[in-house]
Length: 571
Image 1 (cartoon, rainbow, N blue to C red):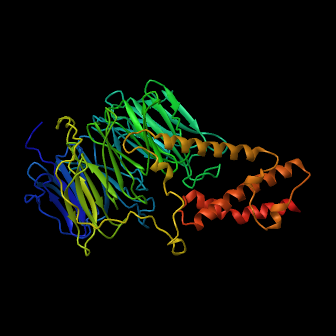
Image 2: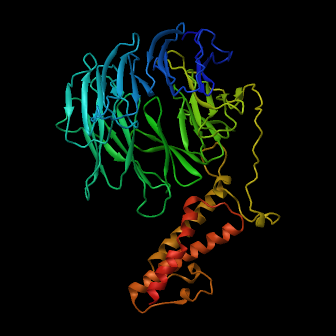
Image 3: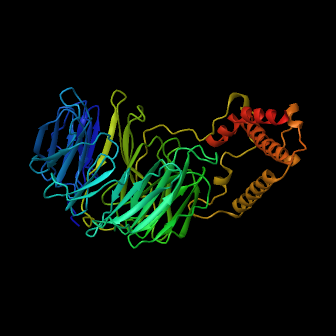
């Protein structure tokens, strides 16, 4: 490892693009000439960090990071996105697809350039910005793109000609393995009406027979996650609507496929959405955060067997450091910004902290620090970024003025092996105190509930978990068993011919007193009464000031339709 290497930090916002030297100095890189344009649309580090490129609405610029000198400057006012090939040999740009009377077929809006010279290599059409990037194999020998459901394979030595074509399969999305030759391609093919969707894994260029296949129903989109060695891939299926009506988030499932032909469904032990999936950079295990809040986190091995439970918590994001020895889990977005840090190989809790209003998080290339930022347009107030040590200490803070917006912060990339695996510090190092005001820890209570003694716990399940242990206390287990018993009793009641008295709404509404001699009708009436009873309890909890989950609020909204059903059965 070179001790002189200090990863730079690129910053993009309404003040343009600037470069910081990063830790420990955090000073401006004077050799980098700032771009003061207020319309810098995008920026990108090359995978090895030897190039940096950006587009400002007028031109695209590429600099060499060894001395920050400008290599290429191209007049490209319409470029809205950039991407480098795996070794940084090529730079691809994307522009909004347009048509005109003179070009009714549209423009070739993706252009590929040689990074070091700016020489134009080829151009092709990609109408949507989602998944617009051409995909290269890790050795850059082959470039792959999707053209209206057909996969086109080009040799990088001749990007203007198609070497192989995987046609007539209606491929909606695909992913190329990061392994060296032979490499594999995972294709997602949506099912036609009444037929399942398919995930097909192929070894290039053997497209006659897939290495592995997974089939599934109720899918709108998929996400694909390869491990770093390219030996296995996770396929997450996402449906916008949960057919069971139990989740506001829709319905997700997680499947595993290996290049050896193995496939399986990853069994998750808590009901609810899948929030985040991430492979360890060591490639032998992956972590999943799932289930209704507070969410559960589990580490699985390559056989999709759970090997360690990280307990429950208010989290929805997973970030491994580049070496895979530290696991970070965060609760961002509509959550309070909690962060947990773990010694991943030894399953030991390191520390926890709060990073509220975080919209972006990234590990340093050394794997010792991580960066959190509050950026626009997600949040237009309190913009800025902070750098934290993995022991939980804040070591640097850069707030933005209220008149300016921060859009993006990105750490310089480096080749694998540039930095040694860092030792883990369980004792917080000396840090600084944040200048940002601390958020109140009190739960919101409506005016009607203020001054009244609290008779509930906002996160009873979370309170019963031992901090950082990955296990649940005896009290927590006792409460869990009670909840499971209640759920089991409720499920059994739903299958009875008539709902038990305890589940029927206590109300003066005459509709709730109806019954029927018809066994089928009586069964339906019982089920509706049971649901109304659950809604009644939720409404009582809401009146007492308890903050309900989104899916619980959705249940309350169904009350009128359930009463309409009951009214129809009474006729």
